[in-house]
Length: 260
Image 1 (cartoon, rainbow, N blue to C red):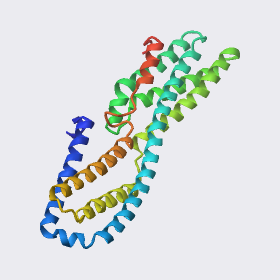
Image 2 (image 1 turned 180 degrees about the vertical axis):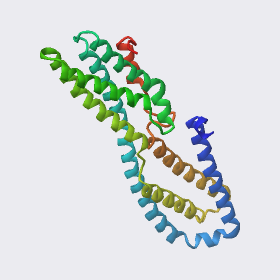
Image 3 (image 1 turned 60 degrees about the vertical axis):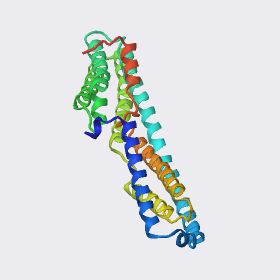
Image 4 (image 1 turned 30 degrees about the vertical axis):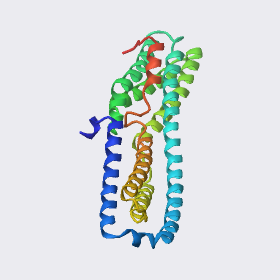
């Protein structure tokens, strides 16, 4: 059910829920602890908040660095993998039939299956068995051609084997990005520190009750937005802001959509 909700809408709902819960907690605290009691502890609370804020900032910065690198690496990997497919198709052009048609057909089918089946499956954290089978068949066809051919043809097959190796490396890197997640210890640190920051904001000694609630809501909204953004970037193929199959779509357009 949640997978069908647009990512932006889901993010807004999560952030609003977090802000509402935080405001409810602050309102409860206001009824239990008077303003004078909260003011008396302002100095100590400010020091603790400063330390917690600094720790939270460091963890957020480190986590953001990791997920941004992961997201960028996924983009580069997809572009490289699509380039490998197009290179295999191009290198097969000088080969005689039926080798040329067979290899070009497999390369085209691989790109098409990824666009039509692979990306929807990756959004659900799964991979395409058909794409894997096509990649294996492509390698097998090129290896057989390399062993049975001689002269110039063998040189072409040798070049294709090199590109197939690159294709498999890029494919493995892409699939790793589908399943790899930010270490759970970092998520635990982020959630615990975020919760402490919000809870300590309940104890701010503001005279205006409404201003205090607004401050808590603003702080919680900012924290929730940061955590949600990190979560989105940590899933480069699973949300509406995912790395898309555009490079493969361009390859299919460039080679004319030929193949099986």
